[in-house]
Image (cartoon, rainbow, N blue to C red):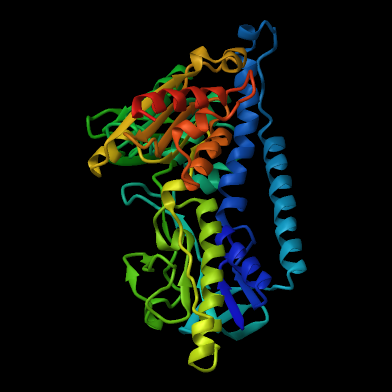
Length: 472
């Protein structure tokens, strides 16, 4: 069996490795760098920059910890060198993984000739690859607002913002979602004056209201100014200054403008519709098993929309590869008895158990539903909150303003969701994600002994409170 994967980002690489593990011959086609947007321009670069920002912010607040430190200066060039070295190291690790798995990695521009053939164009010319199963994993691209001229040299997207050689003194960020807030947090920590313009009435649209309030209040304390319910109606450049006009008539002058309004599936130019693949606007339409409407063709990751997260793409890639191999083996089995013996059990993902994280100060993480969204779906739920103000480890670390919020089903104690704002939130959320996936109740989590002092004790307390409210 020959599996061809188009796109070498987190999802495509995961699909290729899993297919190879299952015994398939695998060709992985990538236009530029393995690791995709996440490794080369997104998750890893931003978190590397945020680590430096955290040190700068802690130095700024050192007096609160009984320390007298000078103001932290920023050597942007060295910061970028560190970021690049980490990216290159991780990229080489992926290359080694694919080599050990005997995956044929082909660099070039891939385009479908039909539903089973990909033509790759590179410096060596054109080569066609025939697939018994094809996994589409072309990822996403930056969404560009029509009201902003991205040809202006002082207009950035997230790609440019992770490669700067100087920290701006003032910057306006269009978009108060995850990407916008993470960059706002970094720039403010480095001493920049930051404005955030968000179209909706709240930051982090779609999140729990308590989470939204906590995030905004924490970032406002860093000096970030929010313009909510506003949009960038026009952005102009005059010399070395940018002028952004808002609907209320306010004009904000900054050194740079960063457009961070999200991403969209990258599907144009690959020949998907021409190969008969059904589309949902820019996204490829699939069923819950990641099958497109064309037999033998699968799609995953940002390309299919949904939760545009690297770890989601990875899991989708693994499951798509398993389903592809199983269905191929089923189709190749000879005779009715053989087919019945190889009847494939296809896999899918329970997205309610997948965590999502925001790497601001403080960190934010969520899994499952908020209380409001659960009630909208007709669930009878309770909510319990444990504040870090009563947590010894959080107090000692100087991060006591956050909380753990658990949503559970009345009567059963089944975990419906969890929202965490506070220290190490992006790490501790996995306790609830794991418990939810394996159908543990809030009582089960509360009865697990948690070490003291740890911030995880707040999870135990929230679960114990939820269990009492649920009557379990």
